[in-house]
Image 1 (cartoon, rainbow, N blue to C red):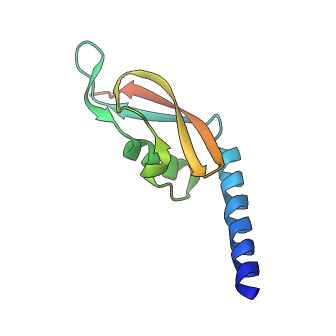
Image 2 (image 1 turned 135 degrees about the vertical axis):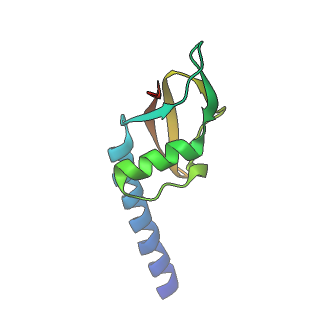
Length: 103
């Protein structure tokens, strides 16, 4: 019984932290600078790891790159909605803006 209660308290704490993080993340704009070619296409690509790193800088909380749901890497400039999967029942959406890097 004590183990079940401890597990329930731990799960409630994780859920509360995830809800707090979701409120903080929803609608947040993440700006990523990337090198761009002549026609506005990126030399590389912006991946879920790049987005997770920038979100960590903004929030100060660790965000696993596997929680960033990016179906395909971003290969051109613009703004893209990206879903962050926090728990099995909780997600947040951030706007990722990819800008050309100044030389």
